Length: 506
Image 1 (cartoon, one colour):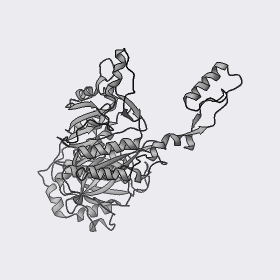
Image 2 (image 1 turned 90 degrees about the vertical axis):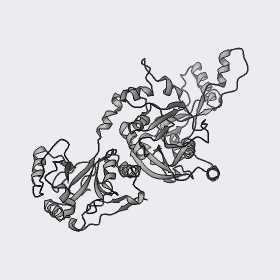
Image 3 (image 1 turned 120 degrees about the vertical axis):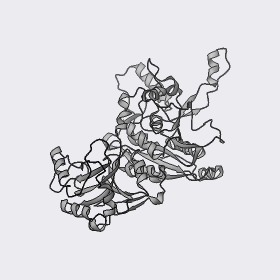
């Protein structure tokens, strides 16, 4: 369990975060707020840190969504490895001092132990100062003025802008008297930080794999930033085997391949996997060729409800799933309809054509967790999105499995009425068929409140009788339509029930 402790308060001289050399200031990107700490925790465990070695300490003001949080790691090497992968964190900084104003900051830096500062102030080290400001823009002349105010620090090396041996980061949160900007406004207190920049993220990778220039896309293609975050949450690393049973156009597979994983894709729609679209016959393989990535090991048609995977198949390292539910319907395979023998050869194909039928999100997720519990290695992770609304979300409804443990639950707000939650689960024990059967027996109905979303969004209206000017043919058509819907024909005047979106009332 990762520990979170409040800010101790008091003077910075009495509580310097970096005295152990293991506590770093994480400067977050101000977006996807609930995803930022879980991503760093997952990356820390991916590079070999144990959960008990990771600790969060709240920043000044104890603001949950502050862009500044202290993170304790077992070594600087771990911080360097994490910084190469992080997406939602700008930088990790070994803080030498912080304060509400320049006087406090100067006193804190001077009070920082000499054994922490001395190795980085020698004449043989080149350096560069990187100024960052949160909550307000900082013109170049003000940045230069800020750098000049750091002259009391005895830098002896030469300045080098390209590939310096040491980088220094003055971080500035909107000072008192300046205009507040952004969603946090004046909640985060004014603060100045200074320290050695240990590692910074390369968010340019998001533009490299931007969907705007990707060759093969679909209506539900996962955006690049989120796909990379999902891979970090899942612990994807070089040599991992990643299976996405809802591959679609392969957005998650591309992100996993970027991190060096071996990928496999599956989908119930074989046309998406093999036929692609366009005159150039664009497919998932087109995306891998576009980026020069190693292609998928295989792409197969798979229904998680009736999958063909053998129970004795070797386990995989990661199982990343992305079931739809709001932007696209969910389907499962169903047996073909019975057909009488006939002389038409085309009719014989009904025994082999893959028929599909809708099924609920709750059933879909139960099948997904069951498949994950069978295939994952112990320590492997399942990552998927759970659609949610204020009326339907209930934490107790998040699907569970005896072999899986919930690691993270992060909400991404899509609109004022809809959101989705990234659920991260880890396999903590070997699969036990008897334990799974007992769990399903005690939880026979997998239906979730989100499965009733249609009834929440739409309200049923009383049937509207046809106008007197309607023609007899129109009346007959309405009667047939009503009968087809199961409502029967009542004197030839019954019509199809009407629905109306609740709109702002929903």
